[in-house]
Length: 451
Image (cartoon, rainbow, N blue to C red; front, top):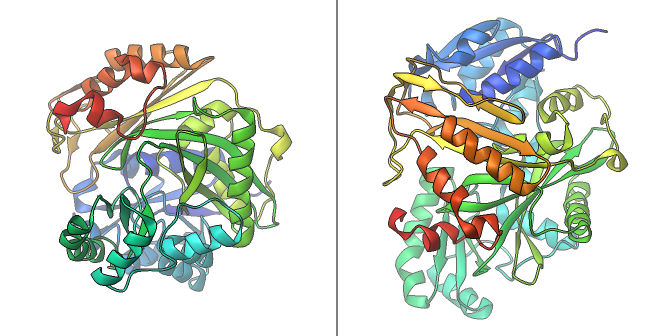
């Protein structure tokens, strides 16, 4: 049987580049790594069949340089590009240019990315699809006076969001008109710098939510399924730290309702490939649409562990025009999985901790998975995200998974740099976490010294 593609270029770095390379190798597909000068000695460069330097350390001159990446694909003869997550993964122009260059973009269509990438448009689509929404502005605000008027209608507290935001960035909680006046212009400036778009909108702020997301898969033939949910409630400043599946707060009925809502959204935009529909769940177990991420998520391994389904391989298959390998009726959530993001950072101040790893021991054993790109004597560079690994465990029950994760964290040794391993240990030891008695404010309530 011929391969789905001859050669795939991975337009990313770190552990996700390795994850894609390994999936391609299993499928008999050659791979091309791209790298900046800072990543010359990175593991994805060593493991790929070919590697091309695309620029200096700064991401805007390398991993965000569309022309360099497409040139690398051209000179190596790659017929597909996998964007991973972050960088260009949700850039509709990049997806469109791939098509114009006769290169398959392994992800959703440019139209999908555009439809769901602008948050106010996504809200409108969700509303028209019957997906529950928090009260909010119909579109973007035209200025601070308009924002004040809309906030008064919605009722404080409100959340001020970047219309083009994502990844937990561009979010400000506002409790009164004075605070909104002070923060509005700064929020627009921040959004413009981060996303190239300074537009803002408002939503009613949910005080004590859980953050639950639905994994969807959609092929080009119109078949659409969801693979359960992930609970991403453990966050610091809207950045996820620990994820698990299934969510401890969902029952079968609520899971089905949220899954069907996510699929209605996909149907509305004729969605293709993998995606994640994110919801907030309030104290009464009512759920509300937040946003859709039109890419593979960092936390996809917990879904893979509880379903036994390889999301990256399926991404590649669907991009090549193949039908979904499974049906909704075949999906069974087995066991419980937890993922801890291991970051190179000071666990007291959360500041990055680049440098050389002088000793490394990763945990192992039944039900333990480590997705990482670092090795002994590897130099962690300061130019990119601080995450150096994802530690994932799965076990028959949540309690078993917590015990397994605590053991794995105890076994994890990284010397030469600081990591947040000790911070994760504190989370796992918490009675509130064990009892699933928490919301998105868990860290600031339980560990106030870290904020």
